[in-house]
Length: 436
Image 1 (tube, rainbow, N blue to C red):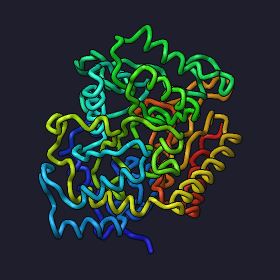
Image 2 (image 1 turned 90 degrees about the vertical axis):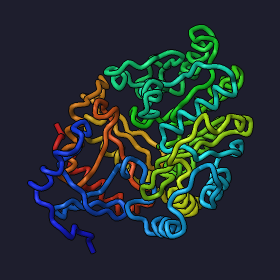
Image 3 (image 1 turned 180 degrees about the horizontal axis):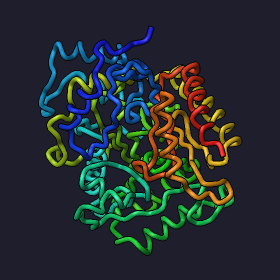
């Protein structure tokens, strides 16, 4: 039975209420009232499939009962506790995170309140331990919304309106196999991109590089998926140069690749790893930093936030890991991802404007181009496709805040094959409207 809005909200009322919202929020006119699994219903009762799982953070979908019940149980005991003290949800979450993470990561802090503050903390840990200052990030990377993390991100248009210092921050090209900046072709390239990073460290950096921070699959930057060997060579380079390798697993973590973390999919051990989004299961705000033992030396007061280690969110995280950490769950992610990729690759054969389809598990991107020969990005068409998808009951997000030419398919991880079929059927109807 469909879950529908109990109270119909008029258009006029919605517009009046919207007038109080900060105009920069970019809020759509649709008002959603109810969610269940991969589905949302708006105030008119229309049903949508959310292909973006909130903002890629609903690993267990909308209104997951088991997670919500765990939070309700904790709320009856205690809603908030200063992170200066211990609580059972925080202790259990730290233990479970260590158990499901790469074996070199043995310490956890949850005294962060978002992915942005987790990444900031990871960089602080690297600088504190190494005594070095320079941070290397990648073109097109997201990594966060705070002033510091927007400076570290690889998107200049996010910094343009502000007076942010770029001191000690450098950017390098991300391995983008579909349109390689070195005009090489994988796998014949012999990983020239890693050697270019080595050259920068040796000849272009300050000679004082503390860390490289990297999304193992580029999220907002277009869903780029580097080859496994790239990571093996990058880790070797970092070890040789005494540079801390930080993985931003805020989007890739908690089962999205069919493994608990992308680090495990790519078979590499970063020195530090940030986690957020999907750890909240059904939308609870939570983040954490995992690290090797050697980083367990920085004083806590150097990175601690009022709502870090929130007991309700940690309870949600514990239940989420309990539900996700099993082979059956990971197999579903892989099988559903393979099903969607197979359909999308058939679409690629049919539609001239689909240049590339790439992804791992349920982290999938579709690159839209003007034609396959030129590979010229077509961000205008990408946005038109996403806008038209709303008419067909699909919520889809694009890359680079709408400036990019990739749309993303990242539904909740407990989606079924039947729901994947429904999603692809709706998407085909959308793409048919743009067939040339």
